Image (cartoon, rainbow, N blue to C red; front, side):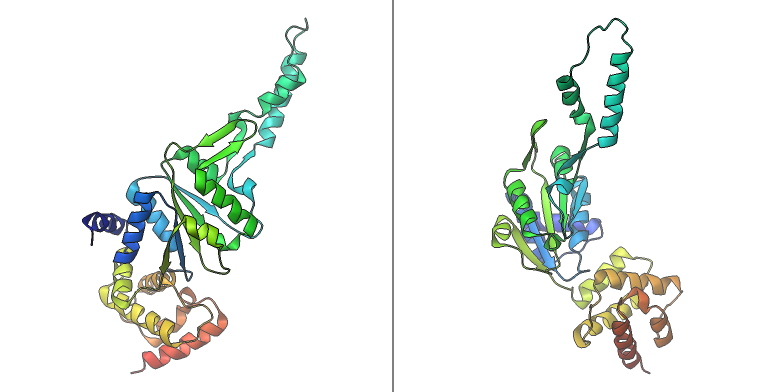
Length: 297
């Protein structure tokens, strides 16, 4: 491994995020080449957590844009603080009306212009990331947005600047580090993918997931962590679950067991705490039956 990649992986590890050589390498290249990083994978595999770890490792602010169906450029870029604009307009009217001699009055055009001052601008995530650069911009679950929003993102990620008609163009002094995540509920367009470096994050292997639990939840004993991860891995591999538990659920389950004072996983305690691991009724029934078989003495 390139020593610079190893150094980056070490900085991420200090934040509690453990990544393999391939992920560390593509992240390093993304930073060096100034290219957005597109992460795909099942929910709970650590895509969002990686962006948070990058921000912490680089000591930069994290700006998050949560995508959803129907999101448009306004929610991503900026809006105007309408209540404050109204108060400002009323203040101007009061000031003008308090001048008994008529004096210098603001005309309608000047009053309107003063309403679109930067102090009334509400920066949404994309604009905020450009203004705060260097920063880490997380565009989370981009697959939930529609085609038009993808096209908008493609334009912004190509120039790292936006134009506000009333104020002019805002361009990042330093392009932000951009991380896009997708749970692949739909296929993203090739144009957006070509703009990015790509990595698929899969569920970690047994040893790596144990290391993740020990790193993120050090209060959980090594023995309990290994028992929990072993059960979770077998559930993923052998059971036809509606939603296989991700690393996030593994951590939740390990912490839940630790809070109950569990030192060794047993059938009864496992059954009582399944709500931390699986989130569908059918999955709970399948998991309970499978754990009964795994832990049978």
